[in-house]
Amino acid sequence: MTKKILILPGDGIGQEVTASAQEVLNYLMVENALDFSITHMDVGGTAYEKHGSPLPANVLAEAKASDAILFGAVGAPQWDDLDWDHRPEQALLGLRKELELFANLRPAFLFNELASASPIKNHIIENLDILIVRELTGGVYFGEPRGLVTSESPNYAFNTMIYNEDEIRRIAKVAFEAAQKRNGKLCSVEKANVLEVSKFWRAIVTDMAKDYPDVELSHQLADNTAMQLVLNPNQFDVIVASNLFGDILSDIAATLSGSIGMLPSASLNSTSQGMYEPCHGSAPDIAGQNIANPIAMIASLAMALKYSLNEVTLAERIDNAIKTFIANGHRTKDISTDNNSLNTNEVAPLIIEILKNDSTN
Ligand code: NAD
Image 1 (cartoon, rainbow, N blue to C red):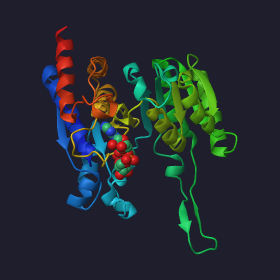
Image 2 (cartoon, helix red, strand yellow; image 1 turned 120 degrees about the vertical axis):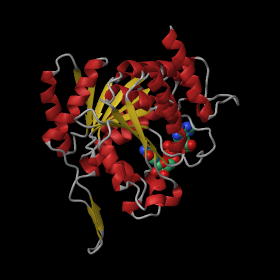
Image 3 (cartoon, protein in one colour; image 1 turned 90 degrees about the vertical axis):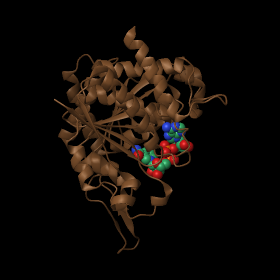
Image 4 (cartoon, rainbow, N blue to C red; image 1 turned 135 degrees about the vertical axis):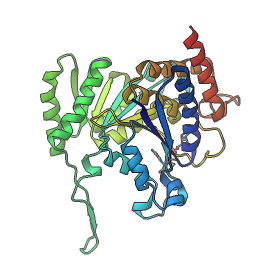
């Protein structure tokens, strides 16, 4: 059956990096006679300018009908003062919520050749390879009640951090299963020392551990994990955390690897449907200059092939091609140590060249 892929380039460098990923996809579709249909639509500020909404209804409908969504990035300063409903970020939040993309997988890894680009000492981050599993549709970002009260003195604002048992079990299941496929270690992160919701989270994850005897489960307090990620990141294999803690910890982990332009992410629901996007934003400071690093987006395509499109071998080939690309010394400006860097549109042809060679070997 034809698999449907929706490409949502969004704003800024989102446009440039999705074009690179599509070039790689086009090559693999021809090479392997893949039965994929591809649709492009606008989201974010670009969609707001053209259609009056950052997530037009027809885009949402198309997303719901797609197997995989490749999402570039959204946002730019010119839209920062729009009211909440029209801000570009609503495209992301709306898609996550409407498609129930509750599981955010954010790998953080280091190409040892790029260790000097990391702010952390080489011996600490060498061989870094962590997977952060972040809960994405619950917790304090969506909890009700929430609000700002200006009719009382002093004024106040409040949010609700809430998780029910089913929400915790489904994200923990993703994390346990990911640990089984990796190095068998899972660290569950919360603040069980001060929050009831965290104590509840810890009890449920502990209860689930008996179904995964091959996974070594540990628990850590979120503030300690933030510190441990910088001091000794190689102690971690898979980390599972709520929406808030996962948001913060995955950005710390991304920073370890040197450039934010290298790291992909996947957001999955309970079917195999998923949205795939780089960890970075729309980078207005370099948009339109043809210097963005498209590797994170190309690696996100690999995750889409693996998790939603049932093409695990092709996903591995892309990951290996990226490794070869780096090992061969190719660099975009963000990871280059000299003035010799590639433009964005030179990256995909080199990756395709490597893929061509590996298919003939
Ligand atoms: P950013 O990730 O866009 O940029 C941070 C820095 O990293 C910038 O200096 C940028 O030039 C650089 N950078 C990012 N991606 C790069 C790449 N692929 N290659 C080379 N360099 C790269 O974060 P920001 O500056 O905080 O945010 C800019 C805009 O993006 C804001 O409007 C923000 O709301 C939005 N944003 C969107 C997403 C998303 O769509 N998922 C995520 C984060 C930020």
